[in-house]
Image 1 (tube, rainbow, N blue to C red):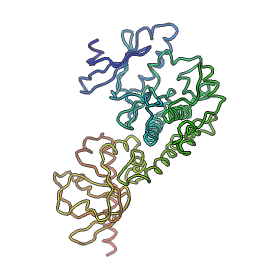
Image 2: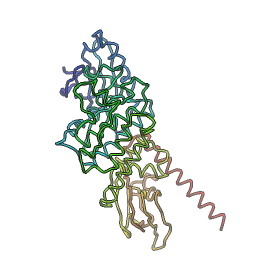
Image 3: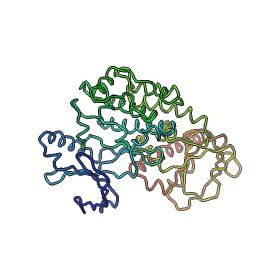
Image 4: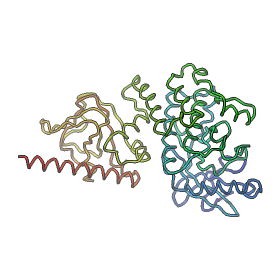
Length: 425
């Protein structure tokens, strides 16, 4: 096969029971894409035709709607009698499956980071009205050390092995009790499934061992799993508690929303972080810092991840000069924590604290080689976020608009304060 629609085929990536995946080139967007092509028999077989068509159309309807850095984006879909395929973002990396092997387990801190990012992606999907229904290691792609992308939203290209004796969609080992009992499904079913994934990443085995689906489903609905620490002694009690709560059989005892799940993971990460070097920043820590800063109050989760991607983070000791009066600069900074002092010609002009920005005129004025009007010096131990103009210029239109809005609010506030001072003179 040389072409799929307008897309030039580069090579075949893999094949399943009902589809095959190709790496292709999008000549118009000038990017690599992954295309899943459904085998014709999958959509014409009497037993599976209606199921596959319904799921395929569901995923096709998500094209362009799930735009998040930790979700595999669907660009396009074609459904007709000749060929049916979905065009998706190409992710150069494997799934989490290899790291569910006892011989290839990831460090605990990386597992927590991965699950944290999954909770944020699934929260985003839930806000868009999407329940995944088939969260498992095979549907979570790992790119780099902890960057993930959740795939197969809508379960549009479900394989035959995933169609079980239970009505509905999902893989038996990761199904929630509610899926098995054919109850109406909410975000809580994905919370349970992610708890199973976390258990497997931590221990190298599933929480329930069974020789057939019926036994597996019985255990899921009636048996309590061993705590992960019984299989891996270095797992702290906090992680046992998180997995236990995520996998509660009763909805009322399970995490009630993704924020609650994320917050517990963040607490573990924060405790780990306190024992590490101050110069180290976990992605989850960065994300939570940004969410807590007033400057980013109007940024969505997806935009905050974008800010993280374009920014640099630095720990500064007291006395470090961050900007020099008279020098040119093409970046601005925000204080993630700590205090800095602004000095002009040796005189103290201002003291800025957590959440405030400085050097923003280099971006607002849009002048090449903007000259700094004052020194900026760390007054205490501080964490500083730096964003270069050229990096922000490459951000999405929505993200840039949010920065413009935030800067405009700051300028208005400063003008108002200046007027108040003038009136008071």
